[in-house]
Length: 354
Ligand SMILES: *Cc1c(COP(=O)(O)O)cnc(C)c1O
Image (cartoon, rainbow, N blue to C red; front, side, top):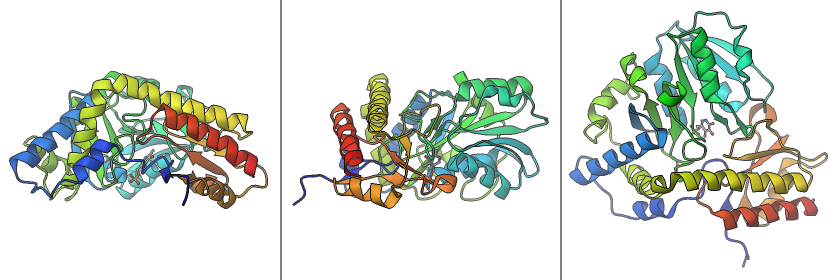
């Protein structure tokens, strides 16, 4: 018998919130019933509150990437030009989605791990219809100051739309739409909302709602908007997951400030332990969603992963350009400060075992 309970220490999927597990254990609901409609409305209201928006949040069946694709598809027409700073796997994904949707993509390639400095916008040559930004670049652990970037971008291109990947910042780090000059944002169920994978959230500010250019069929946001206001969705939704999200938000939102403080403190403790153990952090500006450390000289990711696995923990390595070079440990899921102290200790133990 192992003395360890299995633990998921990855930046998505994450350890499930008990309210999610409780919701998932209930008998199957039919999605066109009053009970389902009221859960759907509660989840949408909660997400709007989490995003601090007077606009709308649409719940889509699919992962976070479905929400990213839906936003690009429904806010920009083919041939329109967008600015995409690329500094990790997920910002790279914005560029790939925009390209696949027929947009003209102006990339700014930075080293993986960097954050985007607002000063980098000075040399940009317009016109631009939009910018696709990444708030928490979980592939490198970097955080971007989306508010400053949105402000700088709109100072140059006031008509443009700013769209942000807030997949691992929603419920992990403070976020806002209108207050930050962000017009639309994406997230998904298996990150800060501590639910299983399967839902994408597409947040639209009032300004973005006015500028919708609906396209596509399954991911057509105009169709969703019409029916989601009534607590339904255009197609059969993953209603079990919607119930889980409603349950979690009902518990977390009344104590959101404390929750965000906890997430920041947990991640800081893990970084402290990692640095004390001799691991070098990847990002310059750290997101509270995950730690990211370079693998020590001569240690493969497989060996490090095994050292954590022996202690019951699942961690994750690098993606894209950082594959085989880094490892990431995250407490974004359901966890408290005790977990953070224990995982910090574990990081030290793993380092000593290498
Ligand atoms: C997880 C994640 C996504 C979405 O990935 P899915 O696998 O489609 O849910 C997008 N951006 C960031 C920063 C992420 O961490």
